[in-house]
Length: 226
Image 1 (cartoon, rainbow, N blue to C red):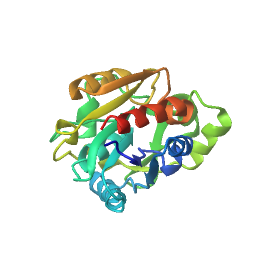
Image 2 (image 1 turned 90 degrees about the vertical axis):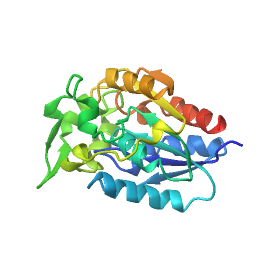
Image 3 (image 1 turned 180 degrees about the vertical axis):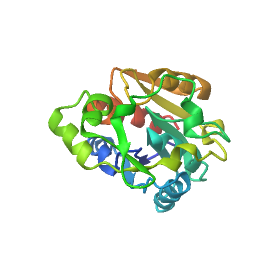
Image 4 (image 1 turned 135 degrees about the vertical axis):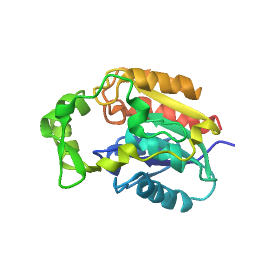
């Protein structure tokens, strides 16, 4: 029996509107899609927000995470209603590993893309958004991404996973080959480590905005395979 409910988890410097293009495409395929609004204040807080949404759904769920949302679904995916995971250019730490530990051996992201945003938080700069986050969508859309972003608590990247759900649940992974936020090499290596069904897209860090049809089709195939 295929899964009919998709729970979408956004990442750092984003909110649920990052799924605006994908949700209608999933709906056309007969799927119910619900987006989580993460507070981005800690791993535990984001997992709580995700569990709240999962618990409101009837039946099994396919959990999808983008970027920092990958760490969130790696922890939140242990919920009994979650049957499988889809990572989109996303973090996939292992058990007892933080996001920072997950990618520390790879080429660092462009530091100039991020700036302090009040005490304990960081956010994308306007230029960083256009050049390193969403470089393959129109500038008018990039400006909306910048304006609607959710600042991230710095502590999020050092919070550790208690148990990596991908260790016990089927996983799928979209690698963004032109990613300037998360190194594509860590995405590829993580997909291989997870044994995930993998799709490589010539995309920036936000394939759900630049190539929504391909992303929606990949999610739908994952749902149908279960």
